[in-house]
Length: 135
Image 1 (cartoon, one colour):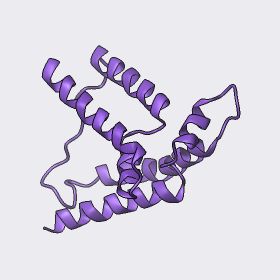
Image 2: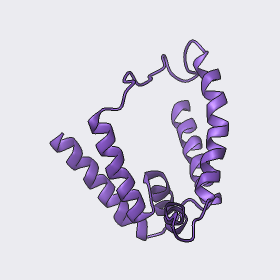
Image 3: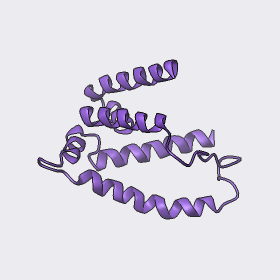
Image 4: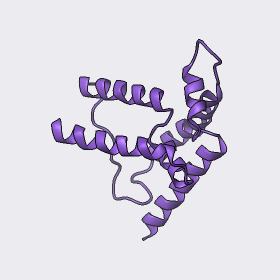
């Protein structure tokens, strides 16, 4: 039960950060990707802030013998990108650029009652189902 509460709090913190930084607004993302037009650097600042918090704390956390709320660390075992990762990342990037949403902001905007990201979420779920079915 404690894990579920902490997961809910972490999700709420993440979603709040997306709303405060305006990352739930697709025009911000499309503006960031439009480097030849009216470029919007907002996403770069958000990413820099996230990295500034994550990079130092990630190393500190991994020095522990185990996570605070789990029996062991579950880290990726692959160290090199494979074709599936590259193809999936490219598809993700195209969808992100076209829609202006990636999963986190889309779900956050949907939770705010916005209807537009609902179609993106439906497409995201359909794409996940198709990928699992045919790969």
